[in-house]
Image (cartoon, rainbow, N blue to C red):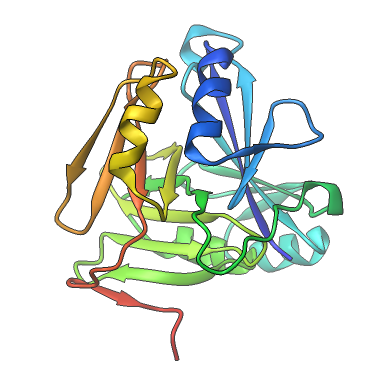
Amino acid sequence: MTIVHAVHHTSDISWWEQVLPVLGFSTTDHPGTWAGGGLLTIRQAGAADQDGATELEVLVPDPASALTAADKVAHTAQETVRATDGITITVSSAVDDLRTPTLDSGQTQVAVMPIWYSPDPDQPLAVLSALGLAPRLASDAGSWRDFTADGGGQVAWHGSPSVALQLSLEHSGDLDALVPALAEVGANATVVDEAYNRTLLIDAPHGAKLWVNGTQQDLYGYTRMDQG
């Protein structure tokens, strides 16, 4: 079982502690770690320039085998895969007490979906595949590809001139209903209509927006990669 684990650094942990339950995350036995589709750990930023930074960890059944597979397409060291664009992914063992809860069919789910921005998709896609993630959606324009982990969580690649790793989420429920619920805990949010879907934008502590994408149903301009 493979799990996506995002680690987000913030100057305001209390904000996240208020917001994450509204979005559907639940606490775990590990302080600061929340479970939904995949795992999200919130950590205190150690410096101003770390506020809003996100790290990516992939939990796998056999880290040694995953690193061996990834070594064919990127530089690997003990417990890490480093792409040539500078993005580093930690690879760890998927221990039972960190596995995400199993949701009943049709149950609203919030999932972590870190976005890997870079100009060239070839290595990011090869690395994510080597680590056991399965392709799900691809844009016909070639600027978006996303992957899912069978134990929970997703990772997306987005074409961009600059390289970055950004925390985003996906939600299968009513985004409009989340706006007043978030306001009750002091979080400002709006829903916007994108060309491909609807997105909830939340004002986050680091001064940027937390993107919560609605689960995509309209596939115009996209192709599902997870269907035979």
